[in-house]
Amino acid sequence: MPTKPNQSASWQGVHVVAFPCNQFGQQEPGSNSDIRQFAEERGLTVNEPGSRFHLMAKADVNGAEKATAWDKLLEVTSSGHKATQWNFATKFVVKCADEAGKCSITRMDGFGTMETLRQQAKEVYPSQGEL
Image 1 (spheres, rainbow, N blue to C red):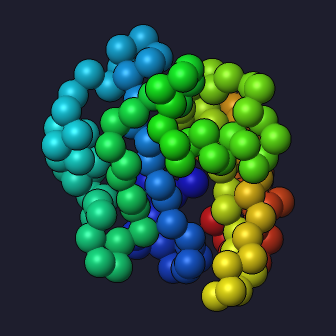
Image 2 (cartoon, one colour):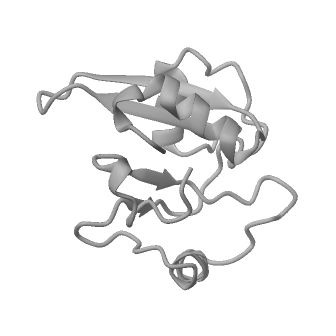
Image 3 (cartoon, rainbow, N blue to C red):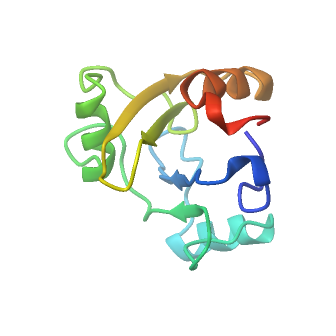
């Protein structure tokens, strides 16, 4: 996946929603503003009009206190029973066919290479062209 989805023309219509989480080796100890600053320092436009990178508040992705949005993604992909191994290894591709809101959601798991991730995304989102 591109590191700067805001700037890649082939990603027209694709948005990245990030769920920072500190449940995995305490790798996200910073505050929400620290996390946003980290993303912005790497060239991402975060949570601004026209941005395709949306940063959620830091939350759990496993257990009883997991984020409602994350829980819903698990529910609709019938993977609610499958714990998230790492928030960066679990991706959900939400593909909406039209403005009416008819969407399909696919869960992708794995720590693969960038090429593996591109291939997985192309299988779900073939109309995106070169990713």
